[in-house]
Image (cartoon, rainbow, N blue to C red; front, side, top):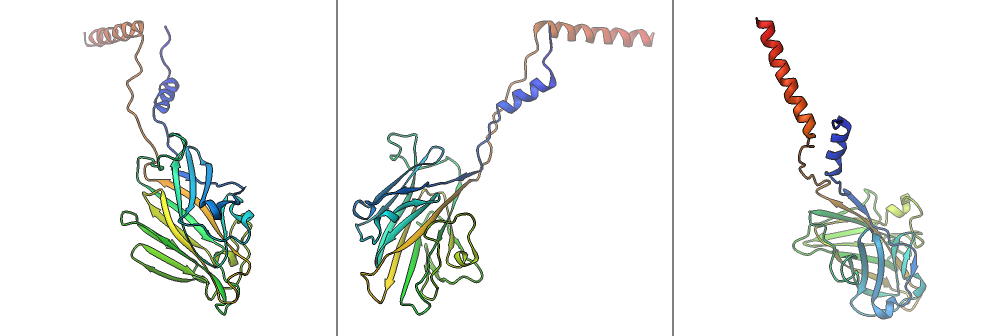
Length: 266
């Protein structure tokens, strides 16, 4: 009868201590959702394993280039003309119902970090520029990060932060990051952090003091990452049982050891 080896016991222990990913990357693909301005809903499937998402607006709006609404290079893209659009980004448990019935909840504390970029201006005179305001409810902590040399004017208060490009130049970014943010793109970007919520409300405003019916502008959102507070779950295991013959052998060896010690004493 063979005894279980040390490797077998170690493998058994590892198998009952499954790991949960400590960071989940959200990718929104490349899609055209040209009816967003009229329907007010964009749906994103499988942005991560088990997670769907929607971007909704509270009313219809005018888009200067409807084909720009959707996503590009794994990031969300919104295109609108002058005015304000109030938007909500929500994450859902894709395994429940049709995948949009239950909000995402990993069952542990978590942080959601995402980036708004391409918040820029047309010229540094304040003639044409963009503004983004991000909101958090009372139960969710809101943080933001900008570069030390940001071109954005930042105003924050209880539960909100506003990023205005009134004094910022135009920066190319409407086609996605295509890798890392450049220095110019970083100057008109804001990284947002919220905790224990799968819903983020924000508004996107285009101020056009020349001609409100002129061409439209884009806002890009990197869906970012979800970081779980608990990286692993450990389940206790029972000892690997020895075969009956093995138990008899151990008992026999123990008896022999006692007899040997007695013989040495005598």
